[in-house]
Length: 396
Image 1 (tube, rainbow, N blue to C red):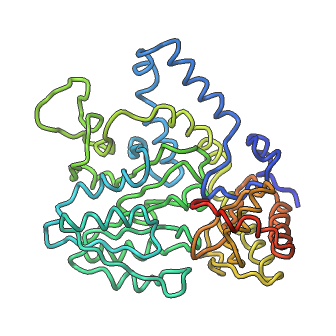
Image 2 (image 1 turned 90 degrees about the vertical axis):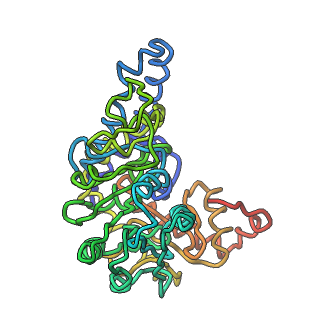
Image 3 (image 1 turned 30 degrees about the vertical axis):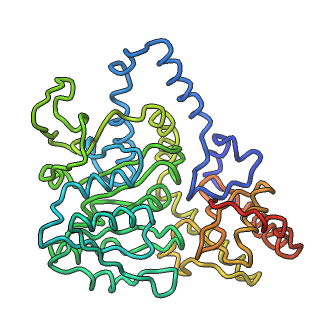
């Protein structure tokens, strides 16, 4: 069967020599990203400080609008941040956690960086309520809804759980939250770029994500969308001069805020990361979320099939409607097996309570899935993983 999405494969140099199945952690780099980073270096070298006015200041807007097009947001509605943790901290800083409405509903499957952030805000009055998984894969939607009450300020929802690729029912949870007067912050890091996402349809109030993974944009650039009519009512305490309506007046008086999404910006943008980010997002936008999702459903189903044929346990949803772009193989000595796969240029990663995460993307060949599972089988059969048991890394 011909695959038109493979026409884009030649744009990613690492695919020439590597079975790259880890786009849920770090997307492959487009070749034109080299050109954009070279452009950054040349501009700095030849234009110096003039580069700010000539091109650099507009880059966050350019990237923000490009990303917004992937999830149904409008122009000038997305601000750019160094990472999702800082973007989320900005959202939290806009609320009074000493008030009666101080609850935040999370799950024990949320990405830990944000759980740490919410936990530390308890010192400011935030009341944390955690919904726990019953099977290590999913979160019960009704349990999430039941956790929301009239004291809930925010439901902090991971759209796709990073360990298991379970897709939460964000629309149903958002409707229930709004009925109780609560707001919803959707962490879409594991969905934008591999699922079809529409903030208008989902009805959420905030959306965060980053270009590092499925958007093939590298580290250092994440994004925050705030429902426009809500944004104008919030004054984040985590702020800086880029959130000011007249930053170049250098006014030392009281802080004033822009009346658009950029009121959530903080300080000087990370210009090299912005140059690196744009090419991957452009390609994903060109390919299209629907085509990417259709291929992802097909290839993750194939991975599940291969696992079942060979007797491997997988920690992902069996229902494709609830499965994101990753299938995790929970095999014996999974961390050491992962290290041997990396040594064989099969690039995957390992996560505790999940196993070896395998994440095909639009540029992945079907035969690469079979090759990966063949290698897992060979490593287990020959015990080639044993050489890695003595010194396993603390990451990856």
